[in-house]
Image (cartoon, rainbow, N blue to C red; front, side, top):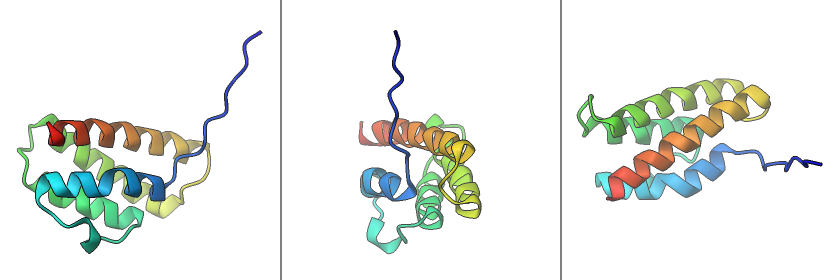
Length: 102
């Protein structure tokens, strides 16, 4: 018998807590200058991406995550479809953070 494990929902607050400071630090930005909202994190990601070549995969992850965060800001961070978007954002930010820190 297979049991499904229920994953905790991802929130914008969690994404901010995990990724804002490391991404900002890697880009020479101050995370405290950005609101800890979906809009604030999206703004930080776009400002970080501005310093990266548009063809660099890290820049792509950042700009796509920022666009998804804008959608989450409009929809709220609850619901199954929104959780799918937040999982995609989490994955993109994980990859971007890893690249920026290396």
